[in-house]
Length: 343
Image (cartoon, rainbow, N blue to C red; front, side):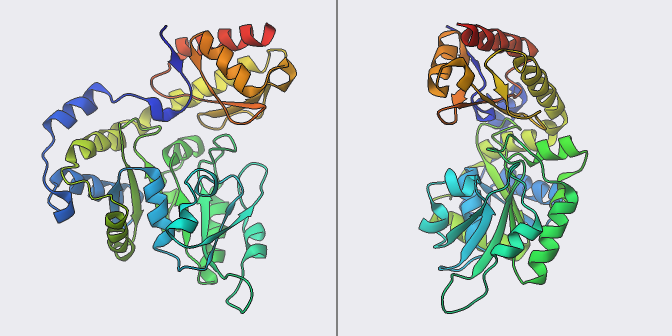
């Protein structure tokens, strides 16, 4: 059976242009700083984000782990939203590697306000762990791909910096946020101290993420990458695909957003399906409780019909659009969801 795969935008396959670039990539030993393709990717990422430097890492989890570590000391707290990726999906690396406690704040749409953060900041004292870092996620995965308003980011950064605190952004899908808000990644991240973004999600590269920030912080981060086993030697074969992803793929993200909105809108008309909110980007959650099935059962029955979507918990199913699922694939998915709900 041939499947249409909506489980994540990580399932995309490299484009023909990426494959050619990988085959022809000029390489060297990146641990020595001698891989020209990696160097070009890092330089280009820094320019695109308006920062001094960038670091190529194999995964977003490693990028976030390094981003947390370079700003903090053992025994500090990191403030983030309660459904943040760094808290729930990175094997407690904030604790295991950075030695920090995470202070979660619940926010309905995954978007924190400075007023919420300010209440949770703890000074140095004899009892509580002091706050060392503020982390925000844009777009917010588990809130349904929601985007931070620019004034909210600016206010958080201004407030944090006035208190001597750095801000790290998990921008795994930040190019989706830029397209949805009509902004640029450089403007969105102008005031954050570091940002991690993925080449292997919405942008479709086969592997790789970037950590971007000041030269001082990225130089420090390079050492942590080595400690985490991220010295990849002739990594130019991956960086070549990353360059294609960075330069060519952001322009087509609107197609993914439109497909997500279309599919969510059509699914909302199906009895028993409750789409949680109109999608801002390419991530949609829907509640299947009224169908009488659990989300894992619903997901299993979709798979029997050739459609892959993951259960998030006992009641929620998530789907993501990406360049490997076109409108025809969305039509197929809609038919499968409708048939499963009706049966």
